[in-house]
View (cartoon, rainbow, N blue to C red):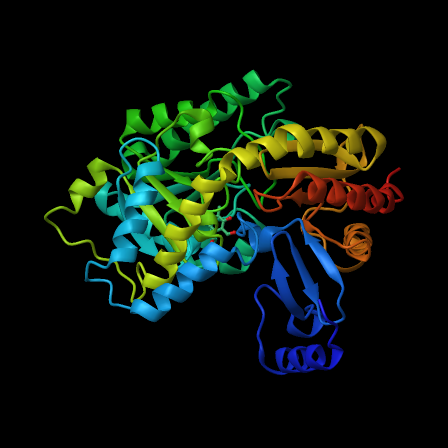
Length: 449
Ligand code: PLP
């Protein structure tokens, strides 16, 4: 990358003057001006390069600027850059076919959206109309998006200022052995107690009032907690028993991230609805959607579905999805994610945990890992309190700054850092990132007891 600080300053000045950023106190942020990106790296206008251990917001599953996907978008733009959703269009048809062929079981119809939150909104709407019931249950430790229903379904604190719109949303605790809500001391016990807790919640809410249970197959933003064996199958069984629609949100975990096409493939469960976005086209053009079971599709076979979007199945986004899925097949990207997790990231992170007292737990699979940073390994007290900001968050801020100074862009959420690079990150790149993480964790160690 050629340094061009003047151009960078202009980009930054216009941003600061006119761009209103997500989730932020506008005057308290300092966005980095990005000049370009390729593969697993991006760089700024000073010419400083960063290894991206975040995949953007966990969406560049095949890295930045893959030439085949860029070419497919260019070609689609030249042929048919847009078209209204009521028509049959080649890119849309082909994307739907490729997705439906990979989703589990009978999830064979695809409703396209512009992203994950809209997918969750529509899955919720489908479940409510299909069952004729009002309520939806979701986990406290979850993120489902920022539109009205999706943010209410979300468990994390970003829900709090939005809680007023929460009609019919009920939260429950999903399994998480390291910080067990059920005080369990084994995976088996955690699974059993979590399933009992869900059943109790359903009993007290009234089974006949519940349209859906929605879960991230492996919760992402909330901490990459792989569910204990038997949990998702147990939820499936409970939903079947009460006629509740089971929705799996694979917006973050889908499309190779966990080392399978979908995280549900690890657990051999088929939900009734599955939401996706992000990795479907590596985030090159906004796209999300809902994969729909035969039974729910049947509900809307002769009755109109009361939902739609101007850009549902936008040709540019769908062409990017077709190219991305084909690239993933041709280059074996799903297998690459599994292999990098097994051979490099898993062992490497566990080795870091042995040496760094700030690492309380390492969890994950594929290109989907979290390090739980703690003050004290014995008590498991988080390195910073839940939802900390300002001074209270200083240890995580210092960790993040140390990583960036070493050329690693880290994913940070509360007291955790997630290692979520592109699924096709090379072994050398992954090792470079682990070495930078090693140094940054020494900064976190300074805040342990
Ligand atoms: N669901 C999950 C599991 C997510 O991780 C996200 C985004 O991070 C969403 C939904 C919302 O997706 P979007 O930001 O595209 O609306």
